Image (cartoon, rainbow, N blue to C red):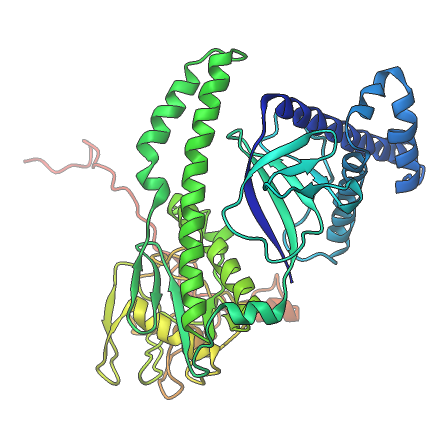
Amino acid sequence: MQLRYAFRLYPEPDQRSALARAFGCARVVFNDAVAARRAARAAGEPYPTSKVLSAWLITWAKQCPERSWLDEVSAVVLQQALRDADDAYGNFFASLKGERMGPRMGEPSFRSRKDARQAIRFTANARWKITGSGKLVLPKIGPVKVKWSRSVPAVPSSVTVIKDAAGRYFASFVIDTDPVADAACLPHADPDSSVGIDLGLTHFAVLDDGTKIDSPGFLRRAEKKLKKAQRELSRKQKGSKNREKARVKVARAHAAVADARKEFCHQLSTRIIRENQTVVVENLSVAGLARTRVAKSVHDAGWSMFVNMLRYKAERYGRTFVQIGRYVPTSQTCSACGRRDGPKPLHVREWTCPVCDTLHDRDINAAKNIKAAGQGGSSLRSTGKTTPPSTIGAAARCEETGSHGIPHRKPCPGGAQHSVGTARILGLQPEEHVKSTTATWCPRCRRVPSAPTRRSAASSTSAGRAARSTRCSRRRPTRRRRRPPSPATSSPA
């Protein structure tokens, strides 16, 4: 598999100027390619090919006085900018056709010199090299000092020079790893060792053996410093050098938070992969949870980053990675007997199973159920599904995170249990009796209709008969305001 190894660069002032020119030239070529494609689309002509764009925007453009400065940078950087434009349009069209997984991609937009991230790429044709003293020699830039934090396991195929919003420079190498060498890096784990992980906010991860890993909350701890830096930035005049200094200060504060979060996820994921042969996690809807009241805490947790690290490290070191469906009722099912007890609010951290009288910790019980579902346990239903268990409208309770469903209703005076789904959605066992489980409740009286209404002359079709069979015959009571008695009709005292 291919991995990226990033190392910090420390260029000299003249090398920073050369890198800035390279960033600018690559950005201009990319924008020219996007503009050429948009012009061809507006004129109703076919898109120009990469060969034609290379001749127009690079070879011929260098001969024009307006683009003569393109000759100051390596031609490989300009060719890779055209390749990036082709890849962007390829992803855009693949997303429109439904061939690309993930969120919908938009049409490529123009790059700006004010973008937070600037990058250029050098392939093997650029003849870059690493000297014996550890410096990275780039064409038309020179030898750049590199901070080698670790050794490179193989010969890199390309290098990408990146400048982030904080003004830091990085060299990112693409490495083709060796499976035999990777297997020897970590000790062989017990073939029967497996772990189920339940991710949360109060505790970042809870393992099925009862281990609870507290959430670091890097963003929460740095909020005071970030608030002060952002306040100073807002008070600076736009376009001034002091504002640019304040902007870099804010970017460095955010970069420190992101780096600490990434380091935490790397250490924890490596420890879990080293100690276990099978790792089972739950497929969480991070995008959905990010639209709730706990959005800041969800983004601060970094669940997606942690799960992605577990996935590629398990593939690299020969471990098994299993991700169960998000609709598996891990918090509702007893891990001892398999009884499904129904949804529970978030403030309920412990609950007792009514069948086996087992006291469960909410997170530990969920981790055990996740592990059982990943190993093919039969106590949980809809294992591995990514769609809701029913299409009738099984919404989550209002107290549960990410719920925008139907609010709680008052209990029916007649004792009937109203539902929007079947008994399986309610979490009831097959032997239990539920009255009118498949019928819909009336939005007026909030009851299940017991009898059809009178035949109406206005509706005589089959659709009308079906609608009358589920229509409630009881009208919703209305409150009438009592009028005070008039003086003429009032009785004398």
